[in-house]
Length: 255
Ligand code: CAA
Image (cartoon, rainbow, N blue to C red; front, top):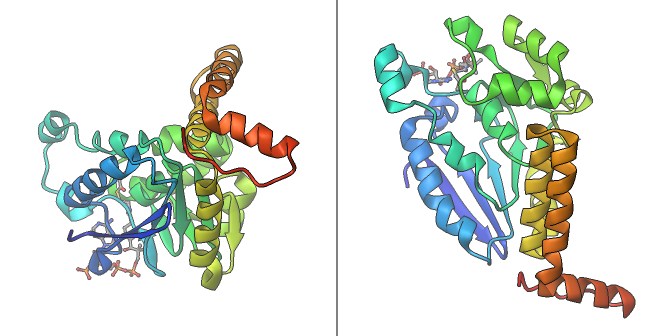
């Protein structure tokens, strides 16, 4: 692999974006590697959580501007440029973005495709595409608006300004802000916690929360309730509830 590095620690798989010379700009090659590597790991019951991270200086500074620049509108349309990112968003294993430095354009959009965003104090978020004469193209206009509301989304997308980790946390984009030197350890700890639970419950939980962004309350509540019912077919449910009654730690198997 040329553009990403993958490490496994028990049930946690950490993906480090690695194009340091271009601040981890998200090229088609990087996307292809990412999806090819993560798809089989996603289906592996031994994978309980993904951590996606970059470097200290940049989580990712956006889609690769130099790759996009020469393309015509027809080429972009014919290739359905960026459509491949849907495969990343659709991964069912919980994903944590551990963000340090720039998370701009596609970088911010990549973080928003993850389930939890953990930010180091140095993290900056933004959708500066307007400065390039374009608009966000990997979900920024939609996800950012759902996550932080119209006021903040319009402000960021129309001015192209960045926001700090603290502002992003206040706005509801970021789950937690930690000192930069604690980012890796905190992400690993959160991922280990998520991965310690039964995978069917974790998958169902993130799917149900995602639904809240997509459908009305009635449909969302029904989806949640049916998922809840379905989990009573799992051994993890029997084990989790028996362990509670017996006052002991549960042993989840993902079955
Ligand atoms: N694509 C391609 N190359 C990029 C890049 C990107 N998104 N971001 C940075 N780079 C490259 C720079 O061209 C530079 O390469 P050279 O050394 O060959 O010149 C290298 O990375 C280092 O960058 P800078 O010298 O610019 O570093 P800096 O510290 O002065 O500035 C920065 C950092 C403010 C992040 C600046 O690089 C920047 O503004 N980058 C572009 C941010 C941006 O516009 N992102 C949105 C991209 S479009 C998009 O993402 C569309 C979408 O919705 C998916």
